[in-house]
Length: 310
Image (tube, rainbow, N blue to C red; front, side, top):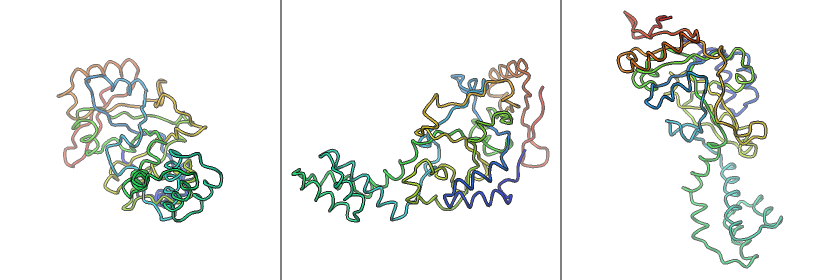
């Protein structure tokens, strides 16, 4: 069930807008080309968490918990670094003194942040703890600040356009021993509008000052990954958790209605290693009238083919 979106004209145009930070234009393009079915690869686990997914509970995660340390890692311009530095300085100063409007304005316009800190503290008659200030404004501290800016703003669920990726069956289903769930979002317009395809690039997304000032416009940050991951054909459900429009909730999507799961596929080695779980899955899918497939090796090529069980 492969698609050609990676090579299609619309995806090339979409990727350009994402890398340029133009999320509005990118959203317009994807809305005209979005899939209605997506796949989720899962392991059978001893705690039975896989049953939550079968029952329609799709869990969201912070990017800080993803398996790729490069995920959501940004690059910054000199101007953006200065904005971040000013904010860190303000937080550092507020540990010592109550800042006046003049103090805040000084920090907003200065290019020499350390000098501005010293002036403000001296005016307030406070002893300057230069070691603390230098540590707060160190290169290492600033890099950590930059990379953690957005990772807690978003909650994300990751899906794929394909159900026959040999690598994904290996990586995400414990070596082809798990399942792949096909979700149908054709009747869930409020959910599908949160889906975005991932852009694969050699270069990290560059955080411009406008993205830092208006963090709600920073969607491209969570949609860029290294080209090595392109085989995943990934789409992400993205929720902005610190927005008034999307307040924090249960960190999950409810897809428990009977039409949300379109089909379920079991891996080529699932029966051999997880016979009890497969038997339980057979009973559930028969009862709920969900088509169940088993992935099998192609006779001539390095590929997987779904075989209908019921």
